[in-house]
Structure formats: C-alpha cells, structure tokens
Length: 240
Ligand SMILES: Nc1ncnc2c1ncn2[C@@H]1O[C@H](COP(=O)(O)OP(=O)(O)OP(=O)(O)O)[C@@H](O)[C@H]1O
Ligand SMILES: [Mg+2]
Image 1 (cartoon, rainbow, N blue to C red):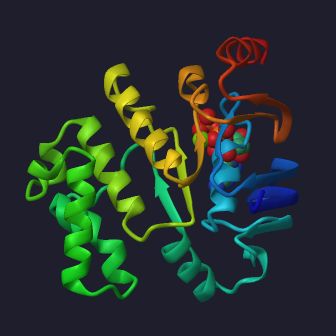
Image 2: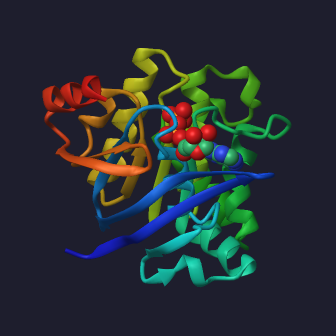
C-alpha cells in the first residue's frame, strides 16, 4: 500500500480579534493511493477545515500534512499554489464556476493556468465533458445548466490537470437526490480507475460508497467505519 496523504497531529486554531477557536484538535490519518475516503460529522466538527488543510488551501496551526511526499506545511505561498494547481482537484457544494466563462472555458482554465498547450487542453476538456455526459453543454454558460450539470462541469474542471488527489466538500449537498446519486456514480467510477478521492458529506448513502469513513466530532476523529456498512454509518450519525 502506498500512502498518498499523511496527516499527523494536525491542529487548527482560528483567531477572530481576541477570540480563538480550536477547530481541529490533533488529527492524524493516512490515505492510501487509490482510496475513497468519506469524512462525516456534525456541522462545525471541522470537516471543511480538514479538507482545506489537506488541499493546501489553508495552513495548520500545528502538525504536518504530506501529500505524495510533499510537506505542505513547509512550502512557501508560491510553491503551495503550484502544488494545488498541479496535484489537487477541488469540488465544492456550490460548484464555484465562473459565470462569464462558457462550460468549456471553465474546464480549460486550470490547465491553461498550469501552462498547458491550448490545443491539447481543448481536446482534454472535450473528452472529459463527453465522458461526463455534458458534451452538448460545452458552449453554454453555467447559469444555463441544471445543478447536476453544473456539478459535472465542476468535476471536469477538478480533473483536467489529472490531480493526484481529488477533494470534494459536500458535492451533493445542493443537488436533488437523483442528480446527487449521478454525481456519486461519477466519483465512484473515477475512483475505480485509480483516482484517490476524499469527500466530506452529511449523506450516509454517499458515505456508503467510500471504502473508509472517518467520523469527526468536535475537531477529533472519533470513529473509523468501513464504507459499505450503511447501517453502521447511519447508526453512528444518529449517535452524534
Ligand atoms: N475562518 C474562520 N474563522 C473562525 N472560525 C471558523 C472559520 N472557519 C471555520 N470556523 C469554525 O471552525 C469550526 C469548524 O468549521 P468547519 O467549517 O470546518 O466545520 P464543518 O464540519 O465543515 O461544518 P459544516 O458541516 O457546517 O460545513 C466551526 O465552529 C466554525 O465556526
Ligand atoms: Mg463544511
């Protein structure tokens, strides 16, 4: 087993003026290459904070984050931005697409920013959009699409640079049940083909797709549940 993500003794303290809040209180975890991990837990338990630290969107107060052998806590801003662009794909609850760019341009953007060749980037974007069943939407703008279609565009954008690690924060949180299941089918299929994936979710059915479920409470990991075990996951959640 190759360990792709190694987190040790991770703490995050937010400071707002005089007020401090410890959102993560010492998290340690490992994610193997090819794994599909779901993070669950009540609102405010630190799920998004953890995901942001793993993806290098924010910095820890203490502890270490390593992704593919890179020590994120030791990188300067420029190196961290480069790391994010090349190695990490992010999917958000509210899609975060750019409204005045077409679907195609939204998907191409991270690859062009990474210095990709225009023609090759276009071909790659077209292939991804086709594969996600939204090839016909390529020249529309995000606001002309359904929620489920917008999230597919966001998935294509997250995958365009073939990231080492795909991170998704409540990717089905803003979708109806059917579109949500379709998005999960897509994530599962990419995982089956080797894409290491870490998702945050409130939905026990979404977590059941994962190979491992980590339960977070009050800034700590309080349980690790095998993914397929829907009943145990659901039970664990009602306990919290
Ligand atoms: N920028 C910030 N400044 C101050 N406090 C913050 C900040 N971001 C998060 N917090 C606090 O840290 C705690 C964890 O927040 P986080 O967003 O990680 O929770 P979450 O588990 O993702 O919750 P949700 O399920 O509601 O998205 C919360 O109490 C939150 O209020
Ligand atoms: Mg959150």
